[in-house]
Length: 276
Image 1 (tube, rainbow, N blue to C red):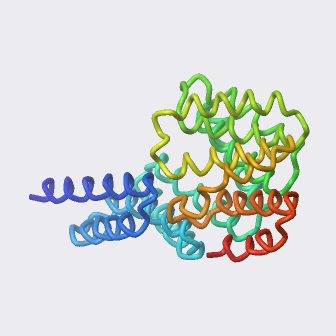
Image 2 (spheres, rainbow, N blue to C red):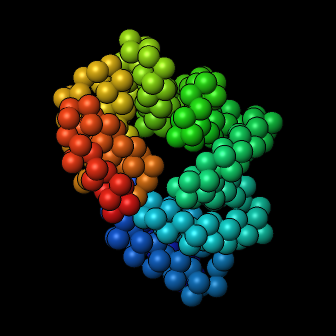
C-alpha cells in the first residue's frame, strides 16, 4: 500500500514539474503542494525533496523569493539526510537564482561560480557548464560583459557533448546577447541562429519563447533595427506567469527601442510592466 501512495506522490510531482515547464504556475503550485502533502501523510521525508524543489522554483518565478529560498533550504536538509547529492545540487541553484531576482547579482554570481567549480572538481562537466551558463547570465545582468563572455564560452564547450536542446540553446542565446552588446552583430546572429535551431521542439514552452524573443530583440536593437526589436518583444507581457529577469530584460529592451523611436510615453511604462 505504501508503494502505491509513493507512486501517487511521484506522479503528482512529475505533473507539477511539467506544468512548471509550461509556465502554468498556479496549476503547478497546487499540484506540487498536493504531492508534498501526500508525502508528508506517508511520513516519507525523502519523497518531499522533488516537489519542494519544483515548488521553490514556482515561488522564485512568481516573485516570492524568500519563500523560495526557505523551501530550497528545506529540500537541501531532506536530501542531505539521505545523501541524495543530485537533489541537493538542484535545490542549491534556487538560492542564488532568488538572490539574482532580488537584485543581489554579485552574491548570486559568487555562488554560481563556487558551485560550478565544485561540480568541475567532481568531473561533472555538463553540470559545471550549466552553472557557468547561469553565472554568465548573472554577469550579463550586471553589465560585466567581458566576464560574462569568459563564463559562457566554457559553458558552451562543456554542455555541447550532451547534444542540442533547450539548455545549450540558452547558452548560445546568452552569448548572442553578449556579442550583440559588444558590437559583434554577425557573430551574435550566428549564435542566435544556433539557439533557435536547438530549441525548435521546445518552442511551445513559454520560457523558451521568452528567452528567444528577448535575445532577438537585443540583437536587433544593438544593430539599429528598432522596428524589429519592438516586434520581437511584443510577446513579453504574456510570456507565462513569470516575474523574472528575462521578462524584465524584455521590457527594458522594449523601452530602449521606444525611446529611440521617439515614443517616450510608451517607454515610461516599462517599470510598471516589469514589476506587474
